[in-house]
Length: 279
Image (cartoon, rainbow, N blue to C red; front, side):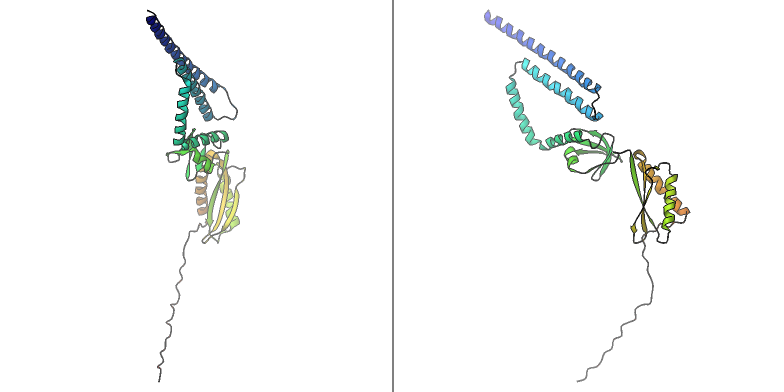
């Protein structure tokens, strides 16, 4: 009789523990969602929208992990054994995924340093594209020809990264060659006039005319003009078109590499004489 009563009590206790654990799981999940949404309502200084998303995920999954540990405890599991097994598993995973750990640490450095943000145009070695995601393990880009590129965070830390849209304006350097016979001062005035008429070209900073040097076939010059970052490519394209059109109208020659051949008198045969040797 006592044994039967004890078994019934144990069964009731197990049912109660399972019910309590299930309740804790539901409450923990709701609390995690509430905390995640609550974090999103606060405006943290110097925190980008993408960093806020990562912070919300960290809070959400952190609370879920604590909830899972509490449920395991209520169900009677020995947490020391569970944590010990988790520790051994973590060490094994750590040895097997050193690259992932390096990317994770590099991702934290990128989030703190913030050399670029989602939506920026960056250049990493020979790859240029728009940043569409900054995650803990990698940075994802979309190139101008609509390709998806994933770059590990470790590579981003070790490689030179150029942010093309960091500042509100950019300078376009237009390199042009003119014939040696052309008047450089006249060409300078024509180029400044082309820049003034272009509505995408900023008045300040003013256009800059630079004489680069003397090439094999041309005098090499550079016209540097400024534009808003969103108008950079449009300005560069329109300026080259207007320069070519204006040069044609003003008879300014744009030379191309060529070779001059001169026809002259052929070399005369070398005179040769043979003298007989007498004994």
